[in-house]
Image: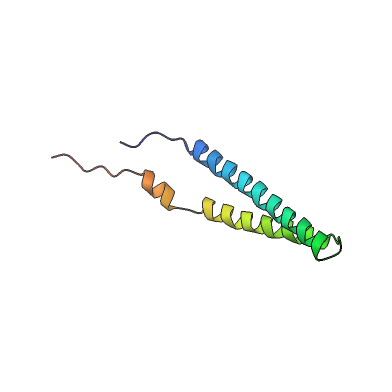
Length: 84
């Protein structure tokens, strides 16, 4: 029998995963933007903003995929066969 997992807990785990993924990707984009800004673009601010935007866009795409993933829901549904 499938374990009882509340839908609020599943949704909370998805939000936690999305927020942590967004933090990591934005921080990575900002970090790469700082490196490129210092080395190649004479300390201009646009590579930092561009890197943060790329990280945020990647995180949004991952979150959109996680929230629209139907296979996780279908795996939890157990079909019972009638006993004869």
